[in-house]
Image 1 (tube, rainbow, N blue to C red):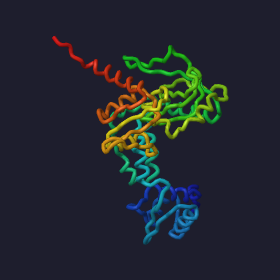
Image 2 (image 1 turned 60 degrees about the horizontal axis):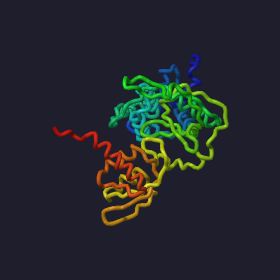
Image 3 (image 1 turned 60 degrees about the vertical axis):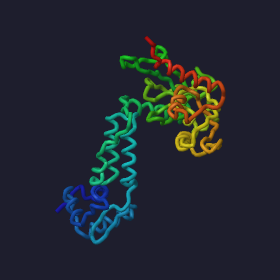
Image 4 (image 1 turned 135 degrees about the vertical axis):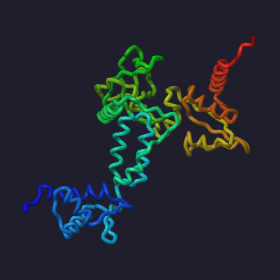
Length: 330
């Protein structure tokens, strides 16, 4: 009887079968493997299956073989790791619903079909809104290409009107910048770049709001500024990626806020005890309404000590909000 053309592919079929169908709770037997071969029109005897499994082990697969049963012992990604990746994809608002479904489907392929059923769940994240701009993935690739090729880029940038329609900023102006990094903050991608319209500082743009990205001539400008930027602390200074001037601000907090301050600024900051109830900390911060909003959430448990101008700006910010809620006596 002539052998099937699939006979040459039997090791590949066995590899896929073990990866897709076996896990700690679902081993297979020699007879199961022979039946799987038969489904692909491949003939096999028990001895040849032993040989095939041995070859896969020589190839590097970790196969567990207790009492005539076979399963994958370890994978490149374990179920707990894949579950974490699935949760991250489902909770990220810059990934569209359509792309989320595709990515989760691919991630399920990293575990057995039995374990993949445990991944069929929806992760709910407060205030999450899935981005509808599929072009973000193309934008990320083009920006990455420009960075690796030392090229500038051009693009248009848009926001939304009150009618929820896209509207290009500055009358459809084409921006020309030198990109240096991609940052993922608050569930969105941002491009950090040097913009000649704002000399002496780095600026950033939301990647999903960029259109018509084109690579332009290089080399990039602003390299010294980027080299002097500590990317590990950049996002702690900038609240919700709001651009502005970096200032050193002295803050006082109640001791109950130690966890919140460390969560925001990291464990390397220096906490200065003032008394049994309070501590102060000196930080470099981009002073902005977003920073004031973060501070205001702590009420009387947080206070700006210096500089005096920032303290005054905060007072004015509070007063402007308070004015909205004043009632007129009749």
